[in-house]
Image 1 (cartoon, rainbow over the protein chains, first blue to last red):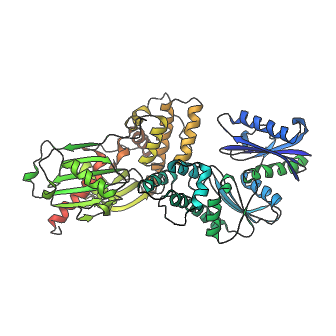
Image 2 (image 1 turned 90 degrees about the horizontal axis):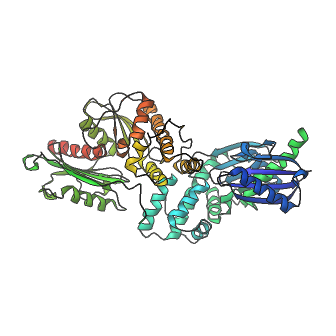
Image 3 (image 1 turned 90 degrees about the vertical axis):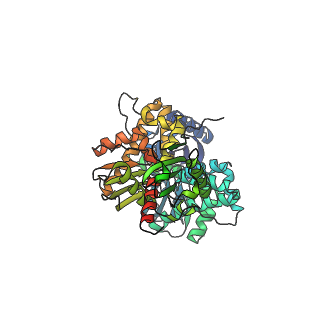
Length: 260
Length: 288
């Protein structure tokens, strides 16, 4: 059985095609843009092409993500938390805690060996603790988003960020630049700040080994370093961290197809 | 040059009537806020001169600059100032201040002077925070609540929007009423998220005025929830920069179902006025 999972994120849309919920055939993603429906259709077509399957070969499509209700092709949907747990357990069966930091949301969850969610917390109200925070900070510091993490890793000097709010933090970064603070130290402060926000959420929910980090921000090595330092333990950074939710949805699609 | 829509006009003022030489006490209040700095000079508790400008990256420099500007064109010199009180987030960094007092106390005291002793609730909407203060007939603080963690409901948030929509910040209020029908509020609380939501609305074809209306009402609601927690007793006064934004003030009045007191002087200088009044009291008590 071939299924598809569509993850309609706040910023990017991800599509995964799977066979029997056991093998990933293809993955595709792009920015959501203004016309998310048209974009999703394009990404979906792209994923089908990569997997060399036709649209009619797909038995069932399940969506997830912030915009999941508006996903084309999907017959049903699953929450981001549920999809993240399912996706992570499929790739890392030893995982018991998942930290997921996307563009406009930070989440943490604990799950059992079957991928059933035990407890979770989500921050979707505030950009501090989400990927947009990093984007604002990269802009204020005038470095590319991808360069922000490697830049921070060069610093050994911990300076505090007073502001929590992304808007206030942007002004603080500008002030620090004016004061001739080395860019790498500011970059480190930025990562420590977001990691502290996520850490307090993780502590609230509780955590146990193995901890897996997913979502776009997982690709930032300085964030991962700060998280490891905060929680005083090693963590697994998921391979292709942005696609884990879509994988979870594609696995869910197999179960859902059987029901109907 | 790129136009900076958030950049509001700086200004100064001198009283046409008051002669500082006749005053027994010349006092000064310096409010170094996160976004703006006001220096207020009073003669025996009456307004003599003030300046209002943006705070730079250094608090001491901003205070110095503000004082020089407030004195500009007057025959008053800084040596003649008997006592100075610093307030605002940079209050401990005012080099020429004799003492520092919190902005909560100063805003309540200033509002008492500017709006009269009937004021019982003061909302100070500053650049990077928002405070709801309950006070007595002397302008003494009874209780307060504040938000200084989040840009939603602060002047900085409004500056971000003025920039996004390319509307001069002073015009935001008036333009926000140029809509046929009041749109639903922007649903995101966070300014960063509200910004992306607003971009989406613009792309969906909303005129700027409608987006401004949606943001002003979201901001009014955010402030309303803060006020609701502390309780509003009449008279109700608003100080700080946002007090000048009718788009937020009128919508807040609607939600609270009461009218905001009209200020006799610039609502943005309330903290500085309060500080200068505290300076006078301290002198009179012989603590100067």
